[in-house]
Length: 393
Ligand SMILES: Cc1cc2nc3c(=O)[nH]c(=O)nc-3n(C[C@H](O)[C@H](O)[C@H](O)COP(=O)(O)OP(=O)(O)OC[C@H]3O[C@@H](n4cnc5c(N)ncnc54)[C@H](O)[C@@H]3O)c2cc1C
Image 1 (cartoon, helix red, strand yellow):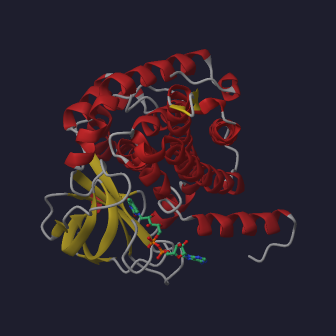
Image 2 (image 1 turned 120 degrees about the vertical axis):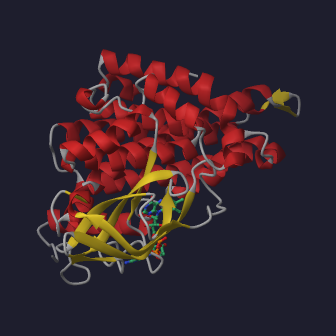
């Protein structure tokens, strides 16, 4: 089903054409293998390679590293269309492209870009970003993972949890404290650690409710030694890089949530038009129409806002409050839509042979991952007081 939305007017002609190419790719190459990917717990490497060849992975990246040199919007289009078909694959790509590749493009040295960015864009490798620790992910500026300088090298000790792509990653972008006080942004450094570095080990993949086609695991660092040229950007400034990327991450989360909500709507419309109960299609009952109307409203509002915010970021505008509003709103809309699509399918909604059950499992992730709903509310309230001149620092 193609997208019919007032938001499409925000896209350029080229971006709309790209969106159709991505939709066709997802329907012919991804949709048929979603169940298989969920069973395997990871996407097949050949699929990522094919996406690389077709220019879907590197659409937004500079041409000299194999990218397409397109707008940031092209990356958001890929996120929405991937999540519409499989939110797990979208999670793997979110980390590879929206996080790791974007940090490399912004801060990487020429050597780092050649070594890591090119294989990501070609679909030859997956990588991880390691921030969350077992004592609490919401408090991201308090890692217990440390790195100390010994001669020409850095020695990293600690562990990270819930790390997307860890079971398949060839490189780990690791945030560790190198100086400064707990809960301060100054004093964090980002290291690029190759998988085969002695002392780095990866736990067993987690068996999880959501995003089952995206592998997640713990990562342990036991006196892991890396050279100074494996630092991303400057020593002690890594947490600033992480913080400055958060608004964009939340907008990309909005793209993923829009994709999931659209998938719920697609399925709800199709099923309710065909299923007859009491001798008439479900779609003729006004209680069904209420569900459809609420889903359609949610998807439209989420999409208009995320397209609009991508454009604002492209213009270099500050979007902190709006990005948190989008992440909070679009994840709530996706969770509600997924609950309602299960309801519309009745007993079949609970059967794994229909996508409703998977959508229900996957939507929930987005109220937790990349900053929980509670954290988004704290940001929205803080920024609202600040805008009213009543900021409390
Ligand atoms: C499938 C999956 C993939 C992930 N991938 C990655 C990854 O690739 N890299 C990475 O670094 N992390 C990753 N994460 C971690 C994710 O970002 C964290 O789970 C998230 O930030 C929440 O941290 P936490 O789970 O430790 O919860 P906690 O921080 O322990 O929070 C627990 C509860 O307390 C609430 N809470 C916390 N602080 C406050 C407060 N001040 N006021 C009110 N309520 C509060 C939270 O909202 C939440 O409801 C992933 C998580 C999942 C589930």
